[in-house]
Image (cartoon, rainbow, N blue to C red):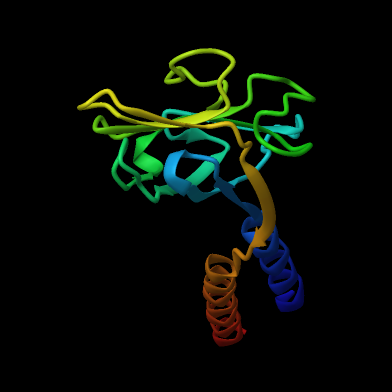
Length: 183
C-alpha cells in the first residue's frame, strides 16, 4: 500500500513540475547613425505551437524583454524592459522582419520617453521601415537599415522543479511515517 501511495505521489509530482523549457532570444541591430547599436534579449515559449511567438502589452508567449540603445547625437542612450514592451511578434524561421511565415513580425517598446521599433511596428515613422529609436520628447529619430539578428538558447528552468520535487519527497516521507504509525 505504501509503495502504491509513493508511486502515485511521485508520478503526480513529476507531472506537476514538468514544464517546457523557455527559449532565450538575443538580438542586435547596427547601422544607426554614428555607429550606434541596439542589443537586447527576450524569453519566450511558443505555447500554441504555431511557429510564431507573440506578445502584446507584456502578455502572451513572451516572459521577459530588455534592450539597450548605445546612443548618438540624435537619440541619447536608453534601456527598455518587459514593462515597456508594447508588442513583439517573431516567426521561428529566422530573423525578425523577414516575414517568411506569418508576416507582421516586429518589436515595439516604449517607456513614454523613448521608443524602439523594428519590422512591423506602430511606432515606425514611415513604411517600409526596418528599425529605429526615437526620443519622444525631442521627436528625433535614429534609423537603421540593418535587420535584427536573433540567436536562441534554452533557458534552464530547474530551480522551481527541484524545489517542488524536494517538497514532494518530504510529503511522501511524512505520509509514509503516518501510515507506519497506524499499522
